[in-house]
Picture 1: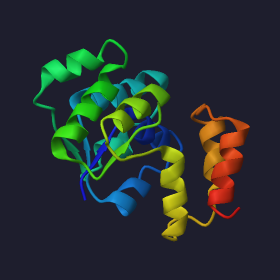
Picture 2: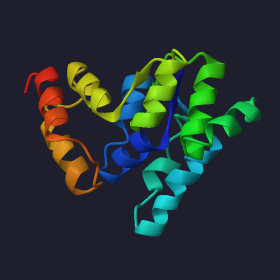
Picture 3: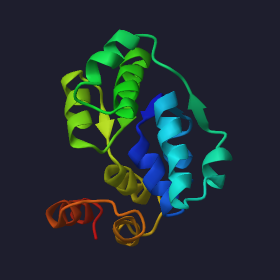
Picture 4: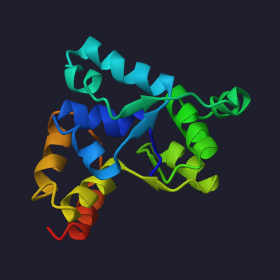
Length: 161
């Protein structure tokens, strides 16, 4: 399975101590350099990067079509732009992405996407976590992950909680 990730799923799971879910679900996860650098920037806010640096299941790769990346930079940040183009080039099975504009761009390019909350539902379905709600609570409190009450209700219903 080929999975490319934007910054949000990695950084948010890192902040709540659950980064280990990603290899259990997806195996190897590929990130472009801009995503790597955006995750590294978390150290400025006191986030420990030990788990990230120890993650031998994260592979770095760069998209070859830098003109396509630059074209996206007008509407998306660097990490999202590189991740979308890399996912497209690698014909990824999934692009892990949360930001709405990036999600819409990936969908417009027929890239199959899944967000962090969908990943948590998958983790529960696979028996990797007993409940989704405690992780959603941790994301809201520790990572300041923004999500509407309606979205939370939908995800919890999807997870059978």
